[in-house]
Picture 1: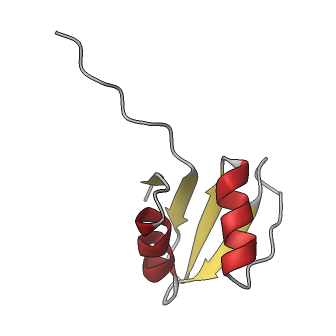
Picture 2: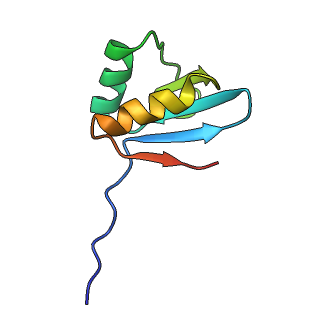
Length: 75
């Protein structure tokens, strides 16, 4: 019996304490973040990366998931 593999993430989130790092892996996720938030992307980690203050990060994760994005938390 084959099990279905989980879908690949659109966003990887790293909780590093006072900030959370959101790295988008799809153009769709990057576009959503730049059009639906005040986020400005940086690319020090290979893909568009957004640094988010800890008090806003859980709400942003919830909003991404509500919009159908797959979010992977590596914390």
